[in-house]
Image (cartoon, rainbow, N blue to C red; front, side, top):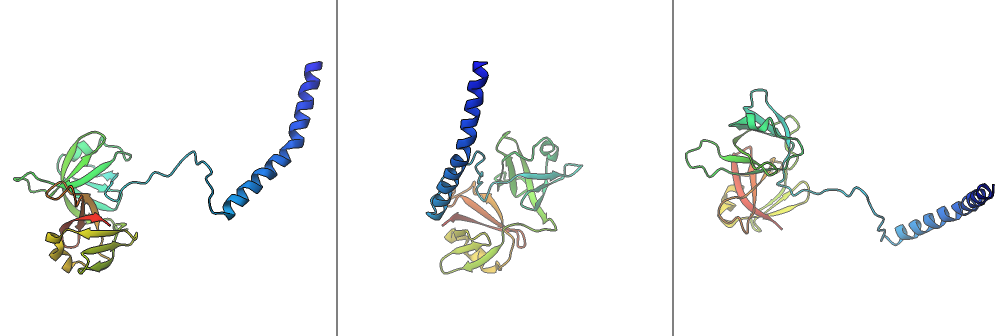
Length: 200
């Protein structure tokens, strides 16, 4: 009986303090927001991937093409391999250095280590989610619709003279010369061109 009375008293005390605790928390939160310095913990922080990170959207029934989540569609070899990939796998798009191959790119699964050779085929009906917003030949800069700016390698600068505003751009990784400085590969599907670049 004494234990029941103690529990009852504790419950009454907690219920009487709860409004004050809630009010104190709300006041602290409001003051924090006014100071624009809130640091409330987020148990599920947003994961931010680099622009050249790709993920699988779909694979054709015959395994002859794959679609990436950015809207680009690629004709591939050994697409049967990609049918075992998962949509959460981290993919990388880079140049194909196999000299005798008719495929210009490789899609590498960074989680499994597998790769398939690929050629750009088309964009889906929604189009690519990154497009050119500004072009500056003077500063060797391309600005995208996500407000990111990219400095183009000087030897590739003549290529972007034919690039146009609103051209869709597919991002890849430069696996060739100057990769340590200009580590990004910007691919223009409309012209079939690609340039080496780095984010400014």
